[in-house]
Length: 330
Image 1 (cartoon, rainbow, N blue to C red):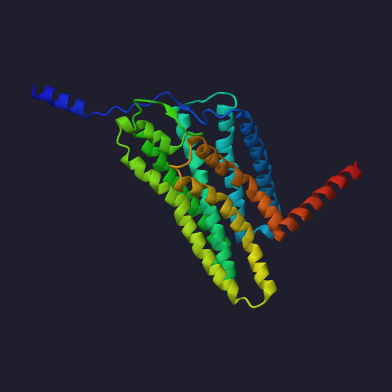
Image 2 (cartoon, rainbow, N blue to C red):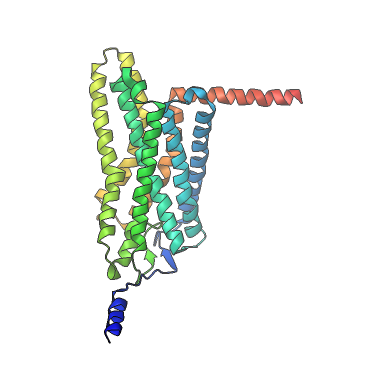
């Protein structure tokens, strides 16, 4: 009798995790002619791939760009390619071709890759702000403070931190049971709408805490560092007496400032006014925030960085010369 009672108590303590075979990504609802928006996203994706591929190719081929700063730029371009590839093809497949059902495992995979590369993009912009801070505020110590080794360490630490955070992020989803709706009110398998579905039958407090922690890691901590670095940079600019040197220092910061504004402002507006923004507007804003910065980053660097433009021109000339030479030889 005692044995039966112990077995009964044991079975009562067993918790069954309910995992649905699939989720339904609702995306945008009630907006006419949305297929044109998806075509726009496809064009943005192609431009993003081409632009970032060119940036990585030029940096890889030109030895003059094998500097610590361009390690971070290369990493940013690689992250941009991965982020858009993790998001846009699946988004187009779901909404343009009506395949809005996604399996449980595919959903967690989608969440993993989208969030990790979003984190890395923020961390890369922070690393670039550190590069500009040292270059302008401590120019004589730049090569000591920003070496190839230190830049590889910073980028490696960014990857390790992003990987750790996202593994916890996804791991917290696997402990949840989904006993109700399987409709995700977003354009991808986002963490917040996922754990909200599990709230009626699971303890979602750890997920809620993590959901509040991620914006701090993506937005506020990097932004505080970037703002603080530019306060120091502005102070240093006033100490530069020669106008031409001051203009040159300002010019080196403009491309990075534009990238920071493009990435952080829309996300901040969405998170601050999330309760006042309609669901469709919020989803469109976040989807544009995910795809536009990766497209604009290489364009801004090509147009704003003289060093990169000269390298790209010289590399293009050498490629054309080789092509003409091979045609002449044949």
